Amino acid sequence: MNQILNWIAAHQEMAYIVILMIFVGIEIIGKVPSVLHTPLMSGANAIHGVVIIGAIIVMGQAEEGNIVALVLGFLAVILGTLNVVGGFVVTDRMLEMFKKKK
Amino acid sequence: MELNLLVFCYLLGSVTFIVGLKMLSNPVSARNGNLVAAAGMFVAILGTIFLYEDEGKKLGNYGWIFSALVIGTVIGTLMAKRVKMTAMPEMVSLFNGMGGACAALISVIEFRHLMHGYDPATYASNGYSFFSSLDGTTMLIIFLGLIIGSVSFSGSMIAWGKLNGKIKDFAFKGQHIINLVILLLNVAIAAFIIIARPEETPLFFYAIILLSILYGVFFVLPIGGADMPVVISLLNSFTGVAAACGGFLYDNKVMLTGGILVGAAGTLLTMLMCKAMNRSLSNVLIGSFGGGNAAAGGAGPQGGTYKEISLSDAAVVMSYANKVMIVPGYGLAVAQAQHICHELEKTLEAKGVEVKYAIHPVAGRMPGHMNVLLAEADVSYEKLLEMELANEEFKSTDVVLILGANDVVNPAAKSDPSSPIYGMPILEVEQAKHVIVNKRSMKPGYAGIENQLFFQPKTSMLFGDAKKALQDLLAEVRSI
Image (cartoon, rainbow over all chains, first blue to last red; front, side, top):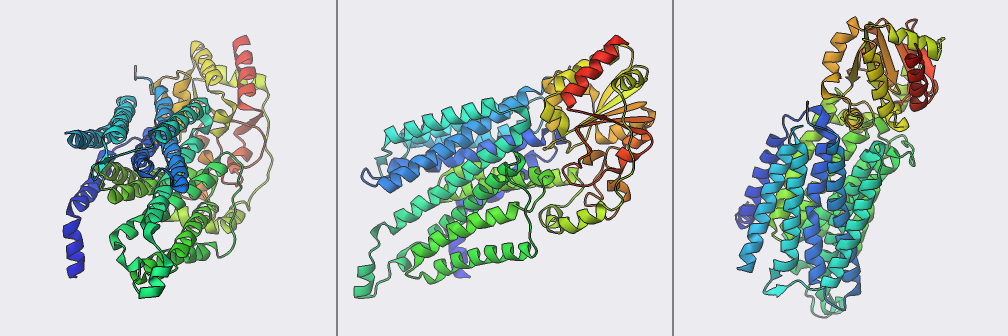
């Protein structure tokens, strides 16, 4: 029990962010019309591409001689970039077709 | 100063993600919302590259980082620009898989990093266990990111393959039990490593990767193509959680915010999508395993005779109707017939016929698929009727023209409890006076079941590719 409390106390900032973000995430898309389901999914897909930041950090911290880490990090950054760039461009292309209501 | 600037960049990124997602859920602001989120992402990435430091040390390997960024940007942009509108869903799935793989790779690298000072000989000589000195929280987060990321990666790849037709549905008896076993085994191994810290930790670690990838494959394989959007949306929220694990690992707020935000919003979106199909998530995920038997039952009362209609007859019927309702489906998307369809609509309107479109929420391969396609062809927004509205208007409709839609107009969903699509809301086209169905052949639709609508007396078939058939039909209508 004490351990769990300690753990929460040590990570309280994170715990707050997680809980608040769960509510925010649910709240902001609660009323989305079904027409926008696909673009919204695609947009959310691009946003979780934020994982690329982790990949960049890993890549930037790899030691010069550590080929395995360099190659894996390199691959991770490419994959992350694909997720971010591809995600935003595809979403934009989808939404381009929703012209303004006349 | 620089570190504080980075904190500000991340704060800005987090806010743009929330605002962007909010704007994306409204048709008017959606496009700008996407750009807002993209701008925030750009700032967060640049900030990380130039401002990040850990214990006073800046990031290195700029050459590697920038070449990877350039390669990813070029390939990503080309793929996203070149993909046809019909293949959008696959593309989203593919990019989602990339994100999952990225999250899994980060876990692998971090694990190798943890293992860095590991030397089995030291353990043997003085009884000091290297593994028990590792931080439990870090290991938990690494495993979580690894498992979720890998499942999301392999699952998305399968979904991608299924949507573009490379992978067929595949299910065997007891598959859900095997799936459950794999999942439990995976969790058990991870828990065992974290609690017991055995000397074989690295071995178990790689076993977890394999099991997770396997689980992703088995998880998606048996699910029918029509349910793929729901699965992709679910995997999308998985990747969000995997990204958030990275945020935990590096104490990085923007990754945590973005990841959890997508995880929560994605889960809700998945449920909304299920609701649009009047099914529960568990029904989509588990129901598929019984799909084989149910489909056999539903296909029972098949056969009967159908009648064909000639192009000129179809043209006459439509030209002299008061109201024509067009029901687009995947066939229209495949044939890229949306422009010619709009032409037909304008020509008929010029003849004084009222033309509208009845849009089923899950017509095509993704919710909203048809709206996107028709909007591309400049069909005005007010002409697109959502299902409830359309169902009211069918009573006063003279001719319904179905373009490559099948399951969404199958009356079995209302009348046949043994049908696998029973309970799904459909477009009640039989209420109209006349139904013309354009299909390439009598082959069943995605759910693989017969459609009694085609054998009804008021229905007539117009076979052929949607684009070709519409071109010919348009020529006939013009000549009247």
